[in-house]
Length: 388
Ligand code: HEC
Image (cartoon, rainbow, N blue to C red):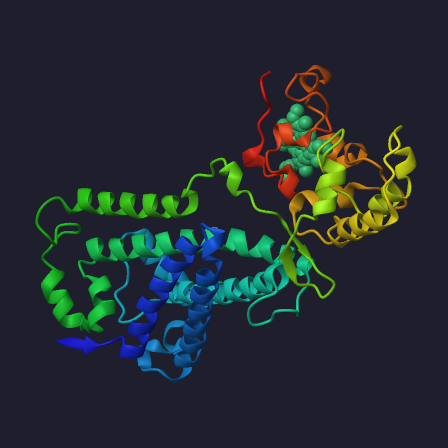
């Protein structure tokens, strides 16, 4: 006899959550898909909130009270599983019940940290304006590892469903579609004379391993796709800075800055690589600019100063800026980025003769090794030291 176990809302919830997770993983690969990623995150959040309510008001098997059991029950459940003789219970068994609860909590945590990141970094979404950039950095420290944990739990979940299928000879994936399971008596009748792993023709053990290998490599593909390659240099965009209201926007290169600071001895150093105090000090001493007179008419000086200060390291959203900034000792006002402890540390492996190569000439020629330097981008994957 078939028993109705999963009611329609629970099934619809399950498959929609699976689809939204798939969408979340694929949209996480590319920043251009960020809006879709956020949308899929809100869907997952909505579904999770629904499932929590449904855990109190759904049918018997959907309720937490049915599948959240104490440690004794969980222990005996695990013991059965270790002996490859899992208990057959309708709905979730006690160990799986906790995993289901963990998955709900994990989705909730991902959604909340995601909203904080979207608000703090992009100033968008539900709580835009409520979080600072630093809050977003902390939230990222939870959001990213938890995403990998989610992949691990999902892979485990699919493997467990396959094991269930092959050991207990019961297709629980189908159960999540139709909602019905056999009662214990007819299940016993059907499987009692079948040795494990031989419910279906062919080579079930081999098939189980193939399916599990596919599941695991699918999980790995989600983590490693697409491989991080070099950016197309022409597509490196200006980095983002926060304006006075805390909104993130891309730096708009100032024409006078490009013209005056980039035309002479060195490239136009990006405003995000030094703090405002450094820029003010540099701009106040242009008549003795590292041994040269680089003085400018007052209007140009004011315009360039304003541009540098508005996008200084304090306002920047990049990792490089934060690290440069935090490495500077309190009270010191470096005049060159190459004097900051973070810069020195990061370039300590490079010898003087590398800097003497004709295409590099000087360590201030950031662009030679960091093609995105004039956009404020110093991503590891883009670094390349010219051979000559
Ligand atoms: C000769 C090549 C070369 C030049 C010139 C150079 N760098 Fe680098 N830079 C490197 C290499 C190589 C690394 C990676 C070091 C590592 O990770 O061990 C690096 C790392 C960095 C990083 C850290 C990147 C990160 O996020 O991990 C920053 C920031 C940086 N450089 C800024 C600059 C700036 C600013 C200039 C110009 C003033 C400059 N670099 C000039 C080769 C160079």
